[in-house]
Amino acid sequence: MFIIYDLIALVFTLLLLPVYLFKGKFHGGFLNRLGFLPVLGKLDRPIWIHAVSVGEALVVRGLLSQLRNAYPDKKFVVSTVTPTGNAIAKGFISKNDLLIYLPLDFSFIVSKVIKRINPSLVVIAETEIWPNLISVLYSNKIPVVIVNGRISDNSFRGYSKIRPLIGPVLKKISLFCVQSQQDASRLKALGVSADKIKISGNMKFDIKPPARSAQDYSIYRQKLSIGAEDILLVAGSTHEGEESALIAIYKRLLKDFSALKLLIAPRHPQRSQKLGQDILSAGFRPVFISAGAKECVSCCARPVFVLDEIGHLFDFYNAADIVFVGGSLVKKGGHNILEPASLKKPVVFGPQMFNFRDMVNLFLENNAALKALDASDLEVKIRQLLLDKDSARQMGKRAYALLEQSSGATARNLELIKNIMRS
Image (cartoon, rainbow, N blue to C red; front, side, top):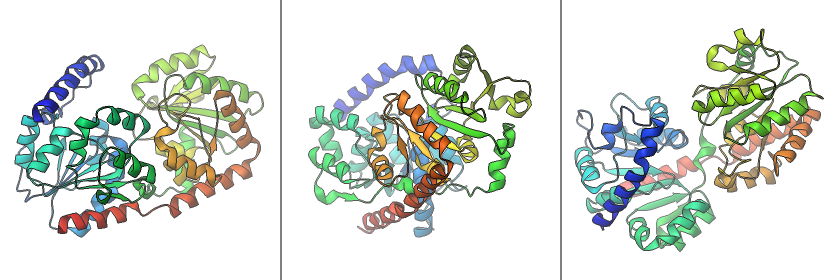
């Protein structure tokens, strides 16, 4: 099977190589991906945790902390695929831990890396299936645990088509800690035995953001020269096709709500300059946060703020009065609504939230968020929040309460991991 998986990995690598070259995605950690690791100290069979990107890194941060308390003598290896995920992980590993990029999924590369690290356990966040990595770990009797596992609609369709190839890999995983009954049912349909599946909940409910105060709220509004009478709409993690709709909605809403301000945070900040051109074309002035928005606002008529830096979206969510979560008006599957919910913000999103279906349904059932059916309905929903500020505040409070009630998945996963370690 290694030959088959190597051939598949080779095809994917050749297909993606032009994309990586065109988009300049090669980075300093690429040697890690080829199996060249830094000089390793004495790791003594560490626990290896893999988190592909930012979202997964934030999820495993709390788990790593709890594992460290449970196994104080253990060292940890943390791997990511993206530089942004790597940057997040740098913030929570200790000086004795090893941070690397995940090796490319060729059997000869992963065999070399696994031999050097020699982990006692590998924990993978959110059902990242790497056939050769998992197969080599299995051959070396190293258990693999999936945490916060989920099988999206697209993944399920794809895996179902290649079940003869993916099925044997899934059977080599020791334990699946999944988010919902639907995820469990889909794994069973793919051939995973029921005794290997535990429904432990969504670890994203356990992400504890830094404490934010009224002072923090004021600081970031001051950066935008926004006063107490102004109303800030923050559109977070937006994609192409959404910003134009948001700008058009904003232009119409301004006729009735002159104090309304708009900040757009594109999911990919490298699109900020193109977004700036679209803002100019719509008759507004783009004000880029990286340029020092406060200094620009006084000389800018009709500003629209653009968050063109990574790592500050949460701060501007905190400064917001209303939050729109992007990736939901276009078919991207949506993005995480828990960050603004943790700040008690009223949240609205579009119809394409299929990557967060269970979470979204829970929020909607508890009147803790608003769903817009399309761009026209999004304008209606935002107008509704603007007209009834007390209702908007109450919705934000319900969202926060729901988040608190739904926590605990990380602790449950820790206990399940302990059972694997004991066995």
